[in-house]
Image (tube, rainbow over the protein chains, first blue to last red):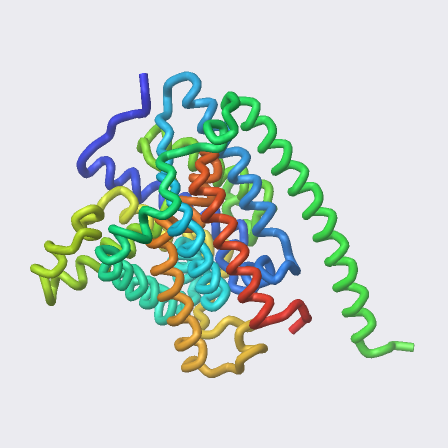
Length: 202
Length: 174
């Protein structure tokens, strides 16, 4: 029991295959388009939000399902509130300035969006490299602030895993339903304003 | 099947379900999860090693995240190939230098796109490494595992992203 143990070159090929599927789905889901990402961030188009919430919900149920029957190991990243929050906000600013996140930036280049390469990937390398240089200085102080270890929401709430999974699934479902309604309203508004701006035929 | 693969786009729910299932599959097959940003640290370390191998060897971050090609590094290469294939199959592959929305706000110049995008990329890379993950590792995978770190970082990504996007572009039509 447990996840498969594939090592060596086969593991690298597995990574490549997973990435090909990842990039393929992102492209078909329109998640590599600059305007889709920026419009998601400026709350004008919730396609990417809905896609993301769906992926989180399906992932959550599947991962915990596999975990329950012993076919998957959870891989929880430790919580360091200071770094998660400050790093998250810095990431967010970069997200809006570039219009891509790291994964979609690489995918965007595959779709022909060369700005993902000449500004995005170059910037990502510099930014990640800079952090390696700063890291030794953050290690003794900053990275100890709010360090809570590998903690999950069920542990934090002190209740079982499945009640939380069911709760979060419902919250995600409700959010998707709500955002879908907003999207329909926004599309209608857009059509009306396009009609209003088009030259009158009468 | 082939017609489905040739479609220009899939509805958000199809792409969302497939992305979720791909992540679940990765936990079983690869004992790992969809994630990308550590690869940029490893790649930066590889490039820096060409000029200052001693410096890289002595750095605590590169000791913890060795500049080698691993599963995730191959995944990132795969993202490029997969996106290229998907775009080619639907004949939507198109070379562009400046996104239309960006041009509507800042003009057609590639220099401005380069400068603003580069700044964005640097913040993205730095922020992702500080937060210990990006929208793949923390949002798709961390939040799905109900990790506190995943939800906190994701809140940071989108609070920061929404604030700066509204500041730059507002909510108006372009």
